[in-house]
Structures are given as structure tokens and as C-alpha cells.
Image (cartoon, rainbow, N blue to C red; front, side, top):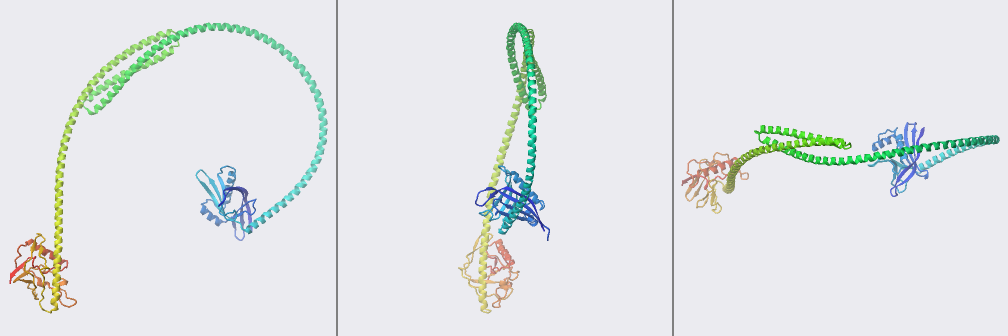
Length: 633
């Protein structure tokens, strides 16, 4: 079972917006129904239908279930539940109805579709509120166009409703016709009764009218006679009253003329008095203006003196800060200035009193000549007070002269202070000269530091050159080691025969540098021809025969371990690969070569020790540039 509850069915103005066509307004009927299904499951669906009364094939449907409403609520951020949503939607539609007749409606229904023809594509109904900032969409519903089956069912329901309405209207028509016929018969009978009553009333009214007419004619004639009599009486009374009024007017005019003559005489007298009073007032005004000018001059002098006094006060206050020992004298001067200010205030009070008396004089000008004498007396008193004020001003000028003398004394003190300042400036200049001398000495020292930096750079360059020389020496040592290794390989091929190494004089360097003294010592002129065979013993050192001389070398590697390159076995031949360190023991007895320093001799020994600690193979022969022992054969 399903129940259908119709909530709204009304035509509304809707703004149509298509894809190609322009905007237009059209009246569309919107029906809102609530379908409640009780079997098999209790379910509520809100059905919204849009139709057009002029176009029966225009049909859009929207079914909103509770699940659909939840998604709609999330999408459009609604704050209403499903039960209250229909009423809120109807309220929005009512607001659109209230605003649709206005030129600029606030709430508006807008239907937009994407297809070329309305009814063939989905449409969207928006409830839009326009404010001063933007168009605010309260609700947007997506409607689907109805298919043929839905259109047919809609048309069938419309036809059924129309037929039902037709049957109801026909039954109502029959009932109304029967009622109207009955009412017509009753009305005709009542009309005939009313016509007969009307004729009776007409006859009665004609009789009453004739009687009333006769009564009124008699009453009118009697009233006319009464009115004529009253008119004649009123005429007589009016004539009597007019005569009496004329007599009273003549008497009053004569009295008024007499009064006018008297008033003219008094007016003339008053005019003469007025002219005299005006002349006196003019004279008084001229005198008062002269007094005002004198007062203004006096006020200007007083104000100038007051300004000078204020300027002097400021200067005195500034000088008090600079000179402390003159504070007592300045305090006395300030007291005198205060007394003078009081005198000036008294003079101002006197001037104010004169102004008040002036206002009294202006008020008293309207009175007679008796008050003029009093005013002249007051003016004389004012002139005497002004003379007193002038004497006071002269005294003030004398006091100002004394103040100027004191200011000269202050200026002399300031001159002394300027002398002290000049002496301090001289001291500052002397200190500046000392500072310039110190700066000059600093500059000299900076130049010396620069020279020292140059020397350091030179020493660094020399160190780099010494490092290069060390590298060349290491190259020579490596070359000699290679030669020894070659000779050792040749000797091993000859079984136990003595090995012989020939070194050409062109291959040996002519001069070998010394690291500490940077002196190139020449090699001996005789060529190195060959090495003697080295016997296998631990007591005899390695020596070289050169023109009947035998050189015994001091070996610095006597107490070091054997490196693998010299004492290790040969992997290919199975024999010893080089000389054993036991043949290179140092001999204590011997003399150094001529021309070599003990320091220069000790430096290559140190370098050889560092090389052996780093497990490198040094040169075991010290024939030309290492200190050794030379013995005759």
C-alpha cells in the first residue's frame, strides 16, 4: 500500500537558460508530492514534478529518497533533515512567488538545460538569491526528462483527473440547475406578491403626499408673514442704531482731532529735545573716541613692555642655567618684575574700569543733559588715572634700563666663558696633533709589517724550492735503486759470479744539491766504472773502486729492518731479490768529505730514517753527497 500526499501544486515564473537561445521567462507548474509506502518496507519518497499547462509533453521528474537526500546534503552542505526538507523547499518557492513581480527580484528560480530543445536533455533547477555581492545558490536539483512511458502515464492520469473533474462538475451543474429553478419559481411568486404590495404602497403614498402638500402650503404662508414682520422690525432697529453710531462717531472724531493736535505739539517738543540730545551724544562720542585712541596707544605700549618683560624673563631663565653664582641677583630681579607685573595688572584693572564707565556713558547718552556733567567728571578722573599710569610706565622704563645694565654684566661673563672655550679648543688641537703623530707611527709600523710579510713570502718560496730539490734527490735515489735491481738480476743469472754495474757518466748528475746550504757540490771527475762483488758477510761495507781509491760509506740504515723489495725472495727465480741490510752497517771510523758541513750531512740521514719508517726503499750508496770514510787501497 502506498499513500500519496500532495504538498504543493502551483505555477511559478522560471528563468529558462538554454545552450544556444537567450534567457526567457516562462510559467511552469511545480508539483511536490510525498509518497509513503507501508508494504513490504516502510519507505518515504519525495517526488518533484515540473510540467507546463500549455505543453502537455513537457515533463521532468525527480524522486528523492532518504539515501539520495543524504548525498545531496553532503554535496550542497544542507543543514536540514529529510523530514523538514519539503517544507523548507516550499518556503523557498513561496519566497520566489513573492518576489517574481518585482523588477529586480531577490529570490529567483532558474532552469538551465544543455540540449538544443527543452525536454530532450537533463535540466537543473536552482533557487538563487541575489545580493549586492554575488548570486547565492541555496538549492540546485537535477531533473531528468520523462520517457514515453512516463509521459503516457502522466497524460493518462491527467485525462483521468480531467474526466473525474468533468463528472464532478456535471453533477454540480445539475444540482445548481435544480436549485436555480426552484429559486426562480420562488422568486417569481415573491415578485408577484411584491408588485401587489408596491401598488398598494403607491396609492397610500399619493394620498399622504397630497395631505402633506396642503399642510406645507399653509405653513409656508404663515412663515412668510412672520418673516416680513420681523424684517420690518429689524429695519427700524437698524436705522436707530445707525443714527446713534453716527453721533458717537462725530464725537469721537472731534476728540481724536484734539488729541492729534496735542500730540503733534508734544512731538515737536520731543524732536527738538532729540536733536539736542543727538548733538550732545555726537560730541560725547567724539570725546570717547579720542579717549579710546589714547587707551589703545597706552595698551599697545603696555603690551610691548609686557613682551619685552617676557623676553627678558626667558633670557634670564636661560642665563640662570649657565651661571649659578648669579642666582640670588636674578631672584631679586624676578621679584621686582613680579611687582611690576602687579602694577601692570592694576593698570589693566583701571583700564577695565574705564571701559565699564564707557559702557555706562553709552547707556547714559539716552538721558538728559543733567547726566552729561557726571560723565565729564568721570572722564576727568579717568584722565588723572591715565596720567598716573604714564608715571608708572616711566618708572618701568627706568627699571628696564637697570635690567639692561645687568644683562651687560652677564654678557661680560659669557665672554669669559668663550675665552675658556677657546683655550679648551687649543688643547683639543694639540691632542689632535698628537693623534696624527701616533697615526704616522702606526703607518710606519704597518709598512714594516708589510716588509716582514714580503720576507715571509720569500722564505716560503725558498721552502718550496727546497721541497723541489728534495723531490729531485728522491728521483735520483729511485733511479739508482733501479740500476741496482738490474745489476742484481744480471748477477743472479750468472749463478754466484760477482755482479758488475756500469754507469755512464752522462747518466749521473754532475751536481747534487745540498738542502741546508743550497750549494751544488761537484762529483769527482773520474767515472764510475763498476761495482765490486759483494761478499756475503756482515762486517764489510759496500765500496766502489775509482782510480785506485776505495770509499767506505757510512750507511744510515744499519739498525733498520729489511724491506721486502731488498731482502724478500724472488717469486720467479726463488733467489734473493736485492742486498741484505746487514751488508749496509755504518762504520764509526772515517772522515767527512771536504766542503760538506756536519749539518748538511745529518739532514739526509734524517730523511732516510723517515723513508725507512714509511717502508720505502732508499739508496744504499752514499758515494758523492753523503758523509763517508775514504781509505786508501
